[in-house]
Image (tube, rainbow, N blue to C red):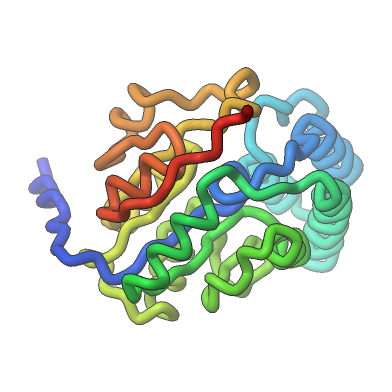
Length: 249
């Protein structure tokens, strides 16, 4: 049996924080079912056997499975390229439809302001497209906090590949043992653990909780070092004193 890798050693103080975007800092209510249904329809048009893909899988898994099946069928590189281009274009267009209804998640502004004042380097690692991510940051006025951004449109591997997170941290010039990745999905935990970067989980916003399968127990089992109920609580976990969300009169 090969020796077990030692647990990663996390050092203090933190120097940088990488964030997921959708669900973590902004709320957009994407039509994920339509995105997955459209992705599967396109894959089947390029030769994937009907029934081999399921809408229960995330978009990146549908793409990986379809790409492999099309490749194994003997399709030319040109046909595979056309499939991926059509796949991404269709998913990107549906994703962009969510921009008008995208809003900031409560607590994001004070959290990011506090981290910036403390001198933390901030970045975003998201499965969203470049167009949606930049549009959402502009619409919510959060773009000023993030000089570093990696999306599924960026060159190289995408999340949940650990190399996506490691590439972002290299751009930020933050050592992996002085970084934390914050996200609201087990895909984020998978990415951070594989990259040996500490992971802080964020539970779903109440407006999205009914459609989410994420939970504190699942995050802890997935390798989270801490779990926050909201961004105000996350700020306290990161050593910031920020006001809580305003209570309606």
